[in-house]
Length: 189
Image (cartoon, rainbow, N blue to C red; front, side):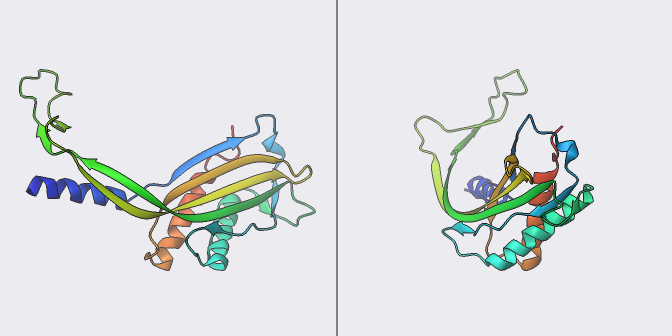
């Protein structure tokens, strides 16, 4: 029983420290070297099933993007002077997660391959324990468009578990971390 409790503690601790998953897409034909100055697109509204403090979240995201782009050498300009436009969407939705926990640990003492010794497995006669939980998933999408053509040329999304109980400072840090991770590969090489 102590082993099972330890496994569950590790499983829920790992889930609580969820990572930010990021993906990117871009137009391969775009010459990103000509992008020097940027301006903000008109803002889309936040969406999702969970109400969020939209003005505060929007401000935090814009601040994080401005800081990161300026750190990377871009300058914020007027809409008329901009080479590229930046926009974003944000949503928080409820999700379900199901995790099976094996009921026994096989030490495979007869194995000679060290990679196969000590594997977690479920005995075919034993039923795994399944734990289902609900959590909130936040999604942030950054869009970059050519200012002249208004064509989308770069896109990035980040998704992570959101804890609505987090302090303002923790939320601010997570947004900054997500934005930094999203813009790390901008412009694409």
